[in-house]
Image 1 (tube, rainbow, N blue to C red):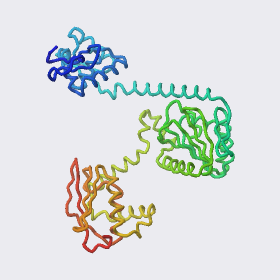
Image 2: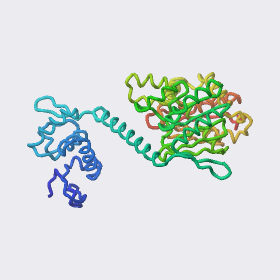
Image 3: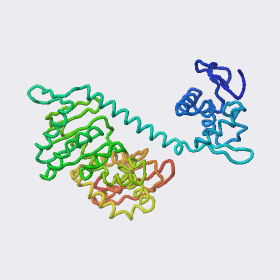
Image 4: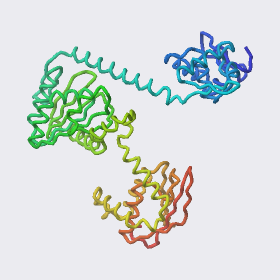
Length: 431
């Protein structure tokens, strides 16, 4: 019981070697116990077994991931596997693509779990999505068919085929716009009304649909590809708005919908839709990526921001502050379109706003301004020489519009934390 190489889950408190964790008794090697506690490791081993690995295979694979490649002869001690079972287990791991064997004496190394288990995870996720859809369809069947009007016609609850009928009716009655935020069920409903959607589009009604992700089970939505973008909103619900006046809210899990006239709800949905539409990727472009075999194409949604951020950081890592004039002016010009009143704000209020924008847009950002010394200190978690945020460029443009040229009194860039200190003229008009 006091072996220096193993810990027993039924005993706690005998030195640092032994841990107790309930019955039945399970032996775990000390190398594994030291990682995050025997309880965590035992959970990992159980999940590996659920994926089809044997007890010994699970222990060896986990030990290899934690400790790196090892001689097959040493794995008995490291993984807590009987010596007579080690070779058989590592050969099985090799056949399953989870380990590789080479050299003399025989060395065993774990394969990257992202590579070998990724396909298995994706297949399980697809299976789970199919099961969820089946469950939702069964729920909707149980809801029956029909519609219930609320008091004074302020809203109506719809279920079953009545949802499709109401959707077609609302599309046909729209004169300006039909917008949809759709999960997979919402997309199915849109396809059920594709004739009405196309007819409305021909009549100069703006039809725009945003679908939540995309997978092989959703191929039918390609019939409306020219009207559709892909963005991630979380799923489980859908919403259509009509002429900025009426909303049709859909609960995919319950299989019911609610049509209502509520300016507040329609306005909120409109703001959400606009953000998703602007940040989304046209479905046809997204499908081009999917056809290349890029299974992770969904991770590129909104990826333009990542690319833009990388370019901005590279720019602000190389150019000195006095060479950013034209870029800063352009950034501030764009900022004025968003908030034109900033130009007429009192000096103190404008500095508070700029400080907040800089602080909140920077990784581990901190901004301090000393009224006495006229020094602004900006700290941020990036190796760039200057704060890598468009708000910093807009801030420089703002200063230039006021005829203020700050001087750099301190600049230190590092992997952990960078610091920039700007000193403003004592008689600067913005201060």
